[in-house]
Length: 126
Image (cartoon, rainbow, N blue to C red; front, side, top):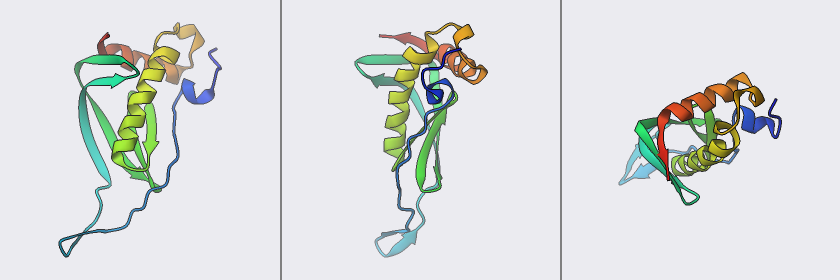
């Protein structure tokens, strides 16, 4: 079994604080957004470009003061949605090397599911 770091077998979660206070915009109080969905046609990270067959859908949500970003079994976090999405892109690149390139026999079932999702989503890496 692949047992480098348990977090790399299944998920990666980075904890960062976030203030969930109400923002005031021109005298009008508006609660902060607590859930977002974004699509990415590609990821550019560490001098590589991951092009996808079709854009991947990232789910971003606030969880106990931390913004979480997830897709393909990869769970990343940051102190705001942008940082969580950037963290996801870095994690995707790392997981490509650490999980997607390994034989299934060296991965847990969850890591195999992440690998399969990544391999089916990625059209090319350049």
